[in-house]
Picture 1 (cartoon, rainbow, N blue to C red):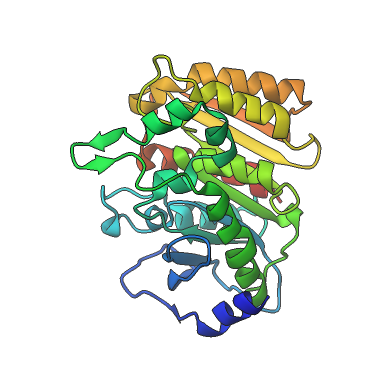
Picture 2: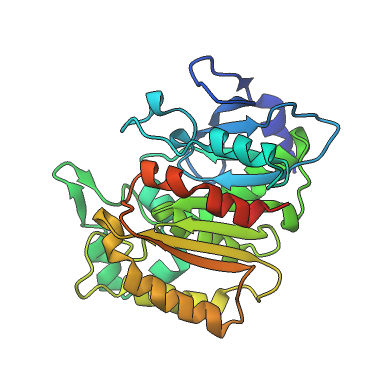
Length: 302
């Protein structure tokens, strides 16, 4: 509690004038300090006519730097979260919601790779994964897998800060998490590790392979076993999965099919579980933007 209060007193909030949104506003916490992970920016989107006297659901989203304004992203693409949220709110299709975008860092792969499944891999496999190069100069993992600490940052530091300083409802039924690719994995993991905190997760283009190749890859099986043992009971949580059929998404369907079998065996069914396939969709913010209204409506339906 002392650490959380210190954060609340010391954090500097600003409204970045270079971030353009369709409606509402973005408030940035620059370099949110943490005892668990390296500091990173957090962008908080407040809907139009946000009122501190009311109360709002909260959606935590990974890769926060990719959510709002394509003019500032590395590939000039964005999720368009502000546009999609505004459209759905205007049509009264979703509950009033604050979106919390947590920026990724150079340790992204280590932050987002579910730690308990990773630690169940043979030591030789773990060691080999740490040797994988994303390219000639960049390792896939910048540090040891630390997703348990990343989730502690979310649950023990960021969420208490949001609940203390913004008009959040704060309960499980109004707290959600979402991401794509590795962000899909960590969203699934967050729901399983903290089922009393998160009421639902949206996992787009979930990177079930965990690495860069599929041949003789034991990682997907480990994720399946983890879900078999740790998936929260049906009826109290929402889970959304999807995948496309182009670029990196071509890898996911057989593994998603296995995940779907776990979901069925655990008693999940609509309206609390949905898996969708999008023909022609690739692994990009552009594709996630085009279908974002679907998982948003699924999680936040009024």
